[in-house]
Length: 106
Image (cartoon, rainbow, N blue to C red):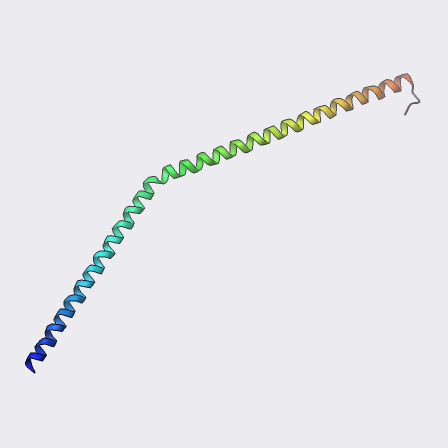
């Protein structure tokens, strides 16, 4: 009976040692993971200015393209309006001359 009790106590001691070793390993892994996360956060913070600059550069580029497109659109519209105004001016001149020549013309 003493041998069996001794074996059980030895098994319990080994089991406790295994549990302790497992807990230490879990704590080590948790700490290692925490350090890796902190390192990744530091790297991300270090790269944040580059990321912001790239974002701002892309936004500036898109804004420039949009502005150029709007300028082109308004320039073309201005040209069309100018052409229409010129055509209407000629019609106004013709109508004025017609009135001067023939006051009863309508």
